[in-house]
Amino acid sequence: MNRKELSEYAQVTARLIDYWSRQGWLKPDRIRADPGNYVIRDWNPEEADVALWMARLRDMGLRPQLVQDVSRKIIAAKAARADDAGSDPIWIVINDHFTLEVD
Image (cartoon, rainbow, N blue to C red; front, side, top):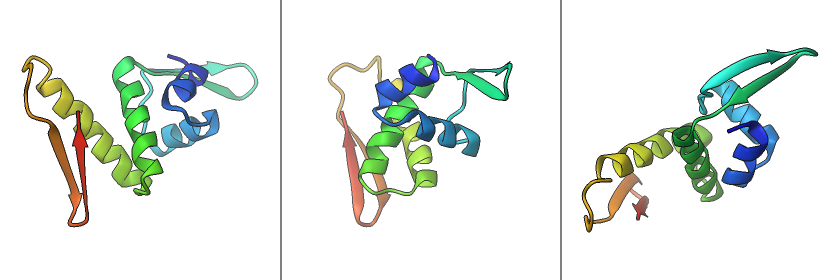
C-alpha cells in the first residue's frame, strides 16, 4: 500500500503518514529512493491497520507515542483471538481514566 492509499485508508493526511514514519511509529514494508530527494514507502496490510488505529486513538486525544504502542497491542490482540469465534471483546486499559473496548 502506498502513501496515498494508506492516508485514505487511515483517513489522515499523507504528511501525517510521513511524519509517523520518520518518527518510527509506522514501519514501512519497503523503502525506495526516487530521483529528486523523494523517499517512497510502502506498507503491508497489518501496518495499515496500525495506522488506522493510530488515527482513531489520536482523535481521542492520546499522545502519538502512546497511540503507536496501543495500536500495535490492539492488532496483536485481534490476531491472537482471530480463530476464537464468539470470544469476549478485547479491553485495553490505557491508564486509570481511559479504557477502550475493541470489537
